[in-house]
Amino acid sequence: MADIGFPLEGKRVWVAGHRGMVGSAVVRRLAHEDCTVLTAGRDSVDLRNQASVDRWMEENRPDAVVLAAAKVGGILANDRLPADFLYDNLMIEANIIHAAWRVGVGKLLFLGSTCIYPKMAPQPIPEDSLLTGPLEPTNEWYAIAKIAGIKLCQAYRKQHGSDFISAMPTNLYGPGDNFDLGSSHVLPALMRKIHDAKLSGAPAVEVWGSGTPRREFLHVDDLADALVHLLKTYSGHSHVNVGTGRDVTILELAEMLAEVVGYEGRFDFDRSKPDGTPRKVTDVSLLRSLGWEARTSLRDGVAGTYRWFLENQGESIRTLAMGV
Image (cartoon, rainbow, N blue to C red):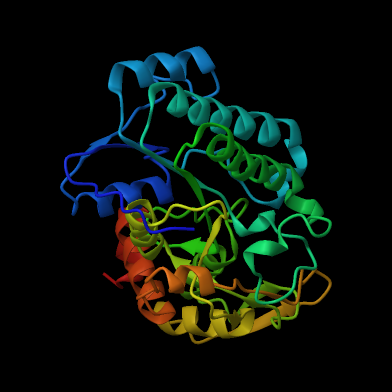
């Protein structure tokens, strides 16, 4: 591991997956750097097709790539569409990484997820826990694809000397999140359920499990800042955990969300639903040693996310929520 320095001034940076929550946050963050941000919609490049990616890369010649494009979804989608999750994600990352090497991209950052770690990994989870045990079965297809991406970056670094690195963020939330109750993750799902309960006057909100599992949450704008920091300062074989290193119980999260939303009802915990692993928090020692720490408190981040939700979920929701 060495701090070789990769200044972004004057560089052309392709954010692959710029329409997603992470990609759009990276685009916002890069607006503060003296660089040119490149984006490509599905109408101009099919990321699952090597020839299409090669052609776009030859024409645009980025100096750096942030590989945030991926097929994502919750437990239900992973269970129903295992071939899609494995194939699409393998193709997207392999095509972009290979094309980046072919055209001589100076820096590539591949974005994964902490779901790469074994189900029973030590807590907090260090980077060297990778491949030390079985994966969580509910998202193994996605996790295997992401592990392959890490290894592909390491392989191109080893064989070709490519400055390709990987970052593994913890549970993300923030502007652009998915609030659909059928496919969203725990924080936006709870926020939506509590919001709906406030509007309807429901006396209680149902929460899956016991409320005791501990989870870590990172604001997506903090992630984007960390990724830019890693782009500029990190060059190493190991992937890097990106998180806060702090966790809360699901009950504590629900109470915080209720305070922000202004809901005064109770929580009913459905203990027939699974809790999952008792604790999941990342060891962010490596990231801290590189000079970066998260700045957004969970309370402030949740409040900002709820404001975004109200402003972007339609006039009727905003009107009801504001009591107009």
